[in-house]
Length: 318
Image (cartoon, rainbow, N blue to C red; front, side, top):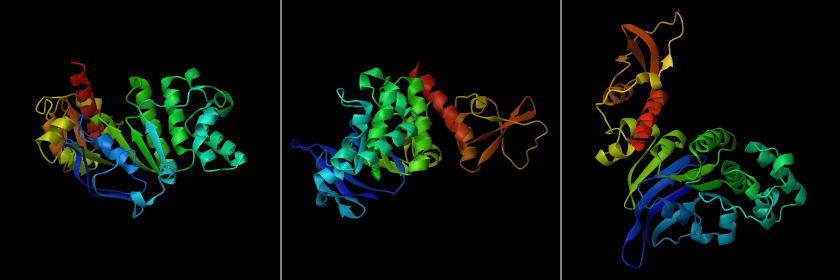
């Protein structure tokens, strides 16, 4: 769907924001770009819709160079969701959503139907919200409208540049959950920029970790957790943060049902170490959890991600 072939972005002072970037993003995939500040992730995102021109290499969408597209048509066919939300303050919600369909000269009946459809899709009642202005909505509601506007003309590609990072933790987690559910229905090709590894592990079909304009590792969340490419990846994911520290496995385990019996499953204690859990889950899909001599539950990879996320949050709050 989207391919980068030896793409670089070099500035006049000789520094590279992106250097020899090679990546193929599959149709219908949610690809997360992540890295420390200055790693080139937002520059990479903005080169896709030509907000930033590339210096070297080629970017293709559906095997066609982006330079061969009419720039207006290219951008109309790519939805864009920003951290700053950037709704037009003087327009109503329905007018904000209708911007690109009107530019594409859709019939008014089709636009009205699409507005209702999208508001329902993002969990907002059209009768309540169509005529409101952005300032009458909460931050989370405004970002839902931002997502709806990006989807308005049914583009095949959505670019999301840290769209939830300015929201409070509760709104952020709710929108992450909603995006997961929404993506199952719409199956868009989504490129999502974040600096939050917890968010990347939760949302990404694949993750691309960047450092100083280059790719360090690309892979699934499981591959980042169990097959980190080097120490930088381990540190960024958080595996080395208290790796031998014993953690509460109960935070991620599934309690054992009454009379349920487990066989042929590796056993860990409720205070196992991160390295012990990671090592066993790299070879097994599920582990039995023992406490006081009895099996009390099971732990799978999703549960391990919850434990790891809890460790990250604890470190951030120290």
